Image 1 (cartoon, rainbow, N blue to C red):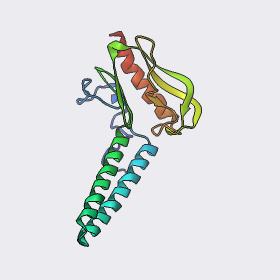
Image 2 (image 1 turned 60 degrees about the horizontal axis):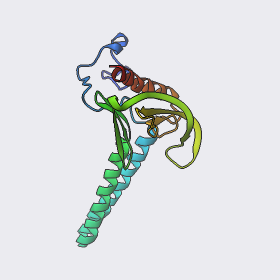
Image 3 (image 1 turned 180 degrees about the vertical axis):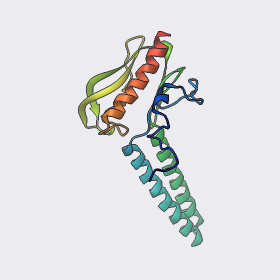
Image 4 (image 1 turned 45 degrees about the vertical axis):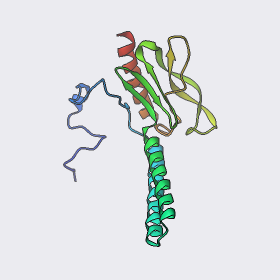
Length: 183
């Protein structure tokens, strides 16, 4: 039974894929790919944990322990902030440059200061853990030759076991680089 609405994976007209959408604003920062299942699952698990902590805070407040309830509320707020930050991690592009958003740190390189954006074969971290495996990484080389840590890898939480999605995302980011590095 066909459903009357669109999903993120389907479009009405396959020929309309090359047409810019009306909200296609190159001045705003955007992630040219969707967050991967590992990242979404980790954020959902953290939000589930936060809901249990909030429930514990309500029970503690009903029991009359306001300091304990405030502690539960603060802990739940911290877990929610961590889950939201985890969903923001990744590579973002705009007309102004390319941005690598990490959990604790964000680095932005303006297109004028970038020499190249390319995919290389190198050891990469598996799901951001200390273990490294051989894989592909999208890197930005600055004008002085300095290389940033990888923007995305084929073994991070967005692209683990999703090689086609990795190829599409790196192609999109490299296309942004080609457009603004040469122009």
